[in-house]
Length: 169
Image (cartoon, rainbow, N blue to C red; front, side, top):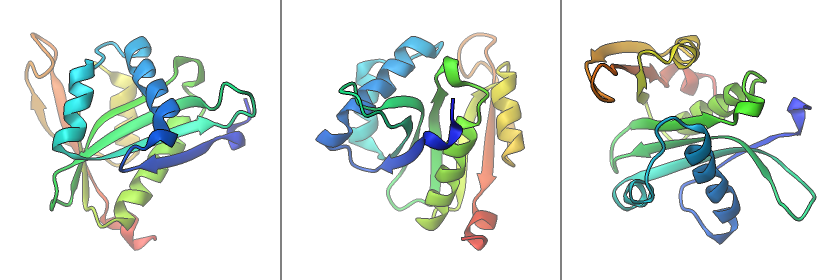
């Protein structure tokens, strides 16, 4: 796969033109995530919070459209300078090829440019590849959340400052 043939974009308000990628994002969640969200959870997200939805896709000239490689959803409370990363997912078939890294670079640059100061997240403690990814991207562990994802499924609350990112823009 040619890594250079992919595109990262984001939207804050979904429009009809985003629906094919949005549907692929939900399918990615349903088919490749161990604990997918319900349709109600997706709907509530957009009713309560200000979302940033990032798409990393490979353009396709066929009628099928664009192939979604990975996606991320961050939520902000209006007036706050913190973004809560609630979902970041990569298709299994393209994991390890640098797509999540490219997506995350765009996320941090966009949020810093928009004046946000911090990215916060929870990650399942046993998800070692994800924990390693976040450490690589300068996230610090704030605390351990016992039974956050269910009995004996602990989480790490982590945060990353975007101040250094803003200085590089």
